[in-house]
Image (cartoon, rainbow over the protein chains, first blue to last red):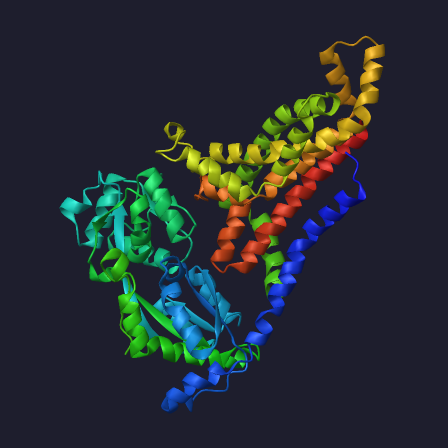
Length: 306
Length: 229
């Protein structure tokens, strides 16, 4: 098993390969930063362009919740934005708690999340600038087709009654358990349904993202509360069915906020400003409404910017 | 840097407050990793030793496979086991997904090649001499393996410590097959991953500090024991 020189050389080359390609990657974007398209579209919309600060940095960090990324919405709408302004948007998809924390820490430039009260707190504290409604989607209660708690028969559109039934029957329920917007919403529903704080072997706290929780519920033949977008994107691979939907309290409002540029020079406010205006613009709102229609026959997000 | 400072404060607070939920997490982490490492050691020590002294066709390729498995990403192991354990999967009847048993199996699969590889490495250098010694003393094959294990115990110990370290620090596999369920399959590394995702950075750092303290204690114990021998 002795190495001769050739073997050693090959080995060194293999080890060095990732570093070499990493270098060439990082040098590539450099020329791409120069081109003019940054100016061009701005010239087409002179009215708004006057308000924008000059774009010096083309990298925008968007902190958002897993639902917008996992559902594929961002992949659908973001290329338009990136092309329009010559901006490279880096999406960090985490739980709502972490997304908001990134804003507080000045680690992101713009936030797209769905926990209105906490978001408004950030605005009040001066961590971010004004918050705008962007769109909403809705939560649904999914469960095994056998529906042991009888939601479909007794409470197909009344979430308080549905939750009471699940608790009464001690039917397994997987909770996100991760302080996410979805988790906070779920806890408030247990409260309003009169169950209070759920506990017991039937109540499973996962501490994971929506996709993982849906998979777990599917495996454990349990109920869970999911956002419609994530559920529909997984529907073909799982047995879970929608057993309760359409209750108005299950609507889920998304908001956008630019991080306060006073947090430091590293905040890319000019790009964030463009992002906020772009996502609220009628064309983008139409794009959001189109998303998912082709694949699922129904929209996943309902734009409602004012 | 605030997160680190408050992380140390929180770590201290967690330890002195004796929070039962946290201690359950620590307990389960140790039970899972120690069980997996023990089972892996039972398989890997004799196997690695045997591999170190025995010559047979195909040995070189087998050794290379073991070395490759030593760097197998935990999340891949988790994924493969998860798919095998699915309700409709080949081993679905055992209902292993989201149980501590599945986590032990995952860490066992992860650690066995590591202990095997390290034991093999130590044995192949010194093994033949010890084997000659055993032969001149007229030892039976099983006595020979026993003599090898005794003579090479320091190498074996470091193999086991390495394996345990890998099991204890791993998050990818146990997250997938365990599911990080509160009170059932939540261990220290999955807690840290979850806390980070929740934006609870200082609590995450605190949990990491406790994890390192435990590793330090266990390593100190093992090396102390090794020096006494």
